[in-house]
Length: 323
Image 1: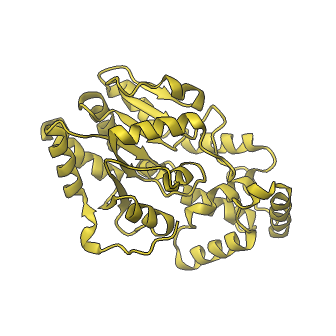
Image 2: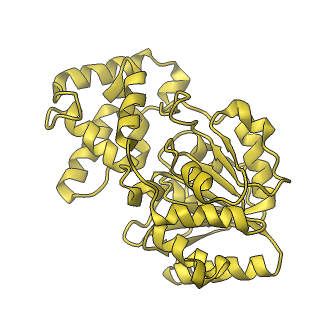
Image 3: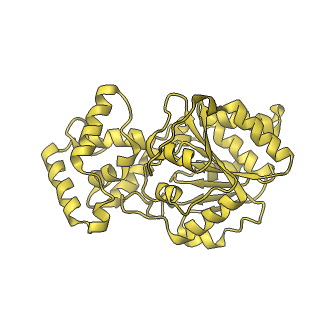
């Protein structure tokens, strides 16, 4: 998706503007809101983001650092594996993979600038790091999330989902169970957690209970991490229905996957009620995300982080005394 327009800085909202808008819309009993959460939402719960994992894995693959229980690897062996995997894929799938030299160049640039590797390389790097047994990758992610506690933002989000009308749906690419844990502990009613696409048809958006749709699956159901992954039809149907009912608020999602991002940027995907894409102040997204926001009627929102956004939303929707 190529954008011919540019973002006017004056059009970028801040946290207070978004939370006031949500509160007013909710008070007027107009549109509902849903959340789309990515790995950045769990950063303040000390779970590594996709960008952080990319860096760890590339450092290991290129022989610079050990990673968890894996010794630093041979860079030449990594290059050979990358070439082998690229050749083994179908012609259609090869279009989804990135050339290793492109990934390597992005890694070198990120090291020099002390900046993140672009999210679009995450799936390629994951595939290289854990080939041929991706169950090792699942165990690695499980280890990364072990013992982590939900941050204050998740506590407040659970309360909002349980207590505020027309705000009861979270769509997430995350494998962690932070939101489910807080809904269980602090929610005032039962919730539905769909950790696999086979459960998507059972989600009823007409009900008021909190709903968590884990479109990359839960950690224990072979989470989706590969470059050739595509969003199953069941999730596509649910998301199309959701976007017709709710205004999405995107938080902590970098668009690095080939499943949700491919769906969002597809010409047939629309946001009849608009949407808001939140990003941490110094990390303004460009590329496909900027094009998506510009071309599909969205708005950028500059925030300090997931926790600070949820605290302000909680004050508006639940009352200061409850936060």
